[in-house]
Length: 203
Image 1: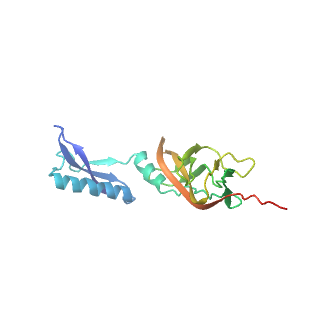
Image 2: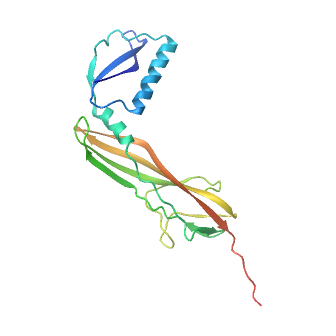
């Protein structure tokens, strides 16, 4: 069992600190430790008393309480962006290769409530590094010329940092229940030199 604390309200609607004892064989996650500490610190600072009706309260852990911290420990795929041939030319489209994946499956993996299955899907967002707005979402892979569809034209020479971000949403199934964990992300950046094409006059 683990014991943690959370802010709640008593029957009269006043804030109180509730003790939650849960039947679990696994220790608290980092997020649970953080939330537990914040609740206790807030209660101490504000003079919030213990809830009067939670002595000895034991409740079963829910699938969502197991699934969300599990999903947040999964390493999601990171893109490996590249813009061939390694530089760009002002006034000409630069074709971004994302070299990643937008689908990731995990499981079945064992948990205290049985096997969990996770299917995460993502979308690409691109910051071209030249002050233009971030572009996306792109639900497909960036490819090289001439088939690539994630392109950008630079106006000025210089060295820019191109950042490719993947926004992930993970669907889980556990113990006859299901849900979604949004807000996951991975990203990678590359430097890109943008040159100017020089015309050469031959006599």
